Image (cartoon, rainbow over all chains, first blue to last red; front, side):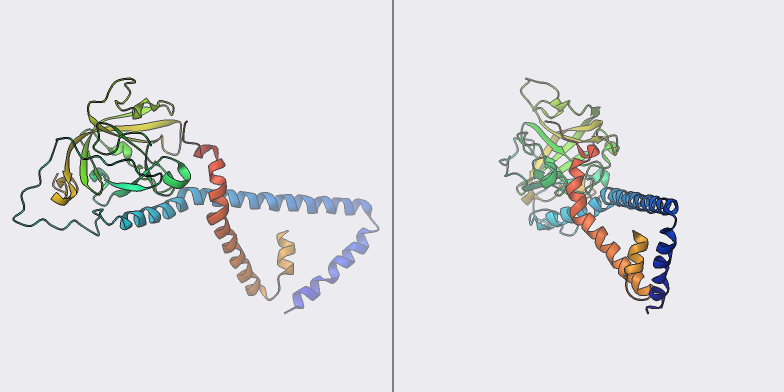
Length: 267
Length: 51
């Protein structure tokens, strides 16, 4: 076991005795040690920076996806691929797509999850929670989509504005550029389904916050329709611009009446 | 630094390699779960909100 150590131990003592007679040689060996140490520290720093990139680009997705799936699973009222809504009785009337004023819930406490979002364009299994607030550490980085505080709630006249990451942290809005005009955005709350349809996509500067005004980009104008807005970073892996999707409420229906055909493959 | 560490680890080569693998895994875990989440908000590319 200690053969290697025994063989090495005498060597430094021997080297020391030789060096004591040659100061110049000792100085150069000190420099070599220092340079070697600095080199090893720099290599270590490089490895740690590489690890940080791996964490940011991969691990944040793993952790946030897991957390958001748990959040959705904990919403007992949420319709999910694993927990489809009970099929309505054969005698039940056809679900009515209602366009009268929709029920609107009050804004919940910060970081409370109050709705889910289905986007058929992003796959039948796309399902994310929507939570109150747009702070990063307790909403966007962990819970996913965040509702801008003070903007309208689902179904209300005004602008239901939602932010989400385009990349990293579960990237709930990663495929936002695939949305085209007419695509449904299906929001479920405990009471009701709200089916919005995309009306416009645009890119703006990060300070053009007027896109989440009650009447989008129309300061001072009273809203007349129920709008939903998605905001996320643009281009990918950058925060130089924002990608914006506006949608308008098409119809709503009580959750008790079934599931909108948009998310069952009907449309 | 690493040469010094290697010379001061006990046991035959495979034991030393095993110790280093465990230490490396621990360093990665500490970075992923505590260090990186702390420093990520300080990174300029994570500054995405406007007031």
